[in-house]
Length: 110
Image 1 (cartoon, one colour):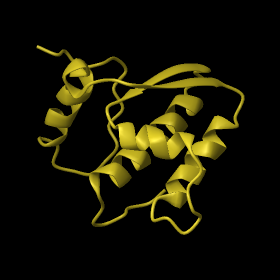
Image 2 (cartoon, helix red, strand yellow; image 1 turned 45 degrees about the horizontal axis):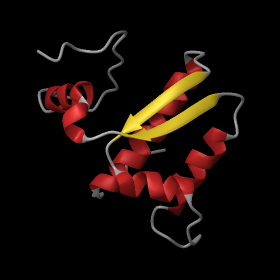
Image 3 (cartoon, one colour; image 1 turned 60 degrees about the vertical axis):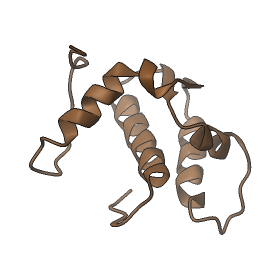
Image 4 (cartoon, helix red, strand yellow; image 1 turned 30 degrees about the vertical axis):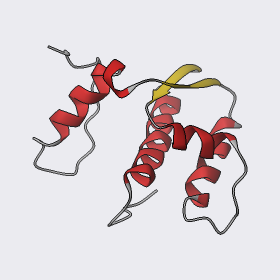
């Protein structure tokens, strides 16, 4: 999963979900409650889409990840209720590089 260059927020969210799941798999987690605020993303991930759809490769990556030997429950949460994600989004604007930063625990929401 490489860079998309110019991308929609939905494309970026789907890409980041897949990247996060790959990291989660690498860390050995097998029970995941996946919370995100895009109902459109949930719809795309849970329904069949045309193979020529712009997001079809990402949706296929998602489906391949789901076939692994683990337990994932995707859940919709309101953006206001997802304080950790908001904090991470705010932090990302202060990072100078596009390097991957892995936090061992979630940032404070204060």
